[in-house]
Image (cartoon, rainbow, N blue to C red):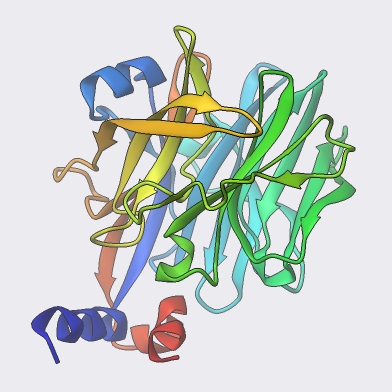
Length: 301
């Protein structure tokens, strides 16, 4: 065995990732220009074997409601809601989407005055669209099925709707190859891009938040998983995107601060009006990590 392989086995056997969600008043354009994030305020955490990650936010009655992956190593993941600024002072998670399968990455998308969510549910091999109502999230339709889609990102660009994603069964735990589908409307049949996979790069394929327009340029956050899962966020500038073409270049590499209480990874970044929600992780020692780590079985398989 090589030393790196031995190190990976040891890591999977005795360490688990513990993520948390935070907010910074750094705007997305400042983060892109600076290449780092300062002054993150972290949400309260429940316990070390439980974590929140994948923050996506929408405004409601003067506050930001933040949907997160609410994960427990015993029961798996569901989608819960935190409210800013309340969640910075007390731990108060409200479950809003859950089922018999794991749910994460509650991607928020606004269109024609409506707020939608497409959580990751790769185990079901479906991407399902939910619409925000007064009291809950209502299932609308299935957009794509038959694929183990990881971290789908839905956005509108040049009068078309796009979904970018990776696939769980593509190697490197769904971090390797970038795919795109497009449609004329949310209700239309989604078509695969003829260049799929658009890229094969473990350092910048997997989605890491909402694509965002800044000064007329389209930027796509992605995960750098080359050293560890969710190690950093790479901001890509999309240069060309059409039903026949695609190109992008990395323009910023955002790592967690080593002085942070969560210095070992950063894998979601979403812009608000005057702030940005993020998540970061710390690696925690646990004698029973081999029973909890979701990647351990895949590693041996």
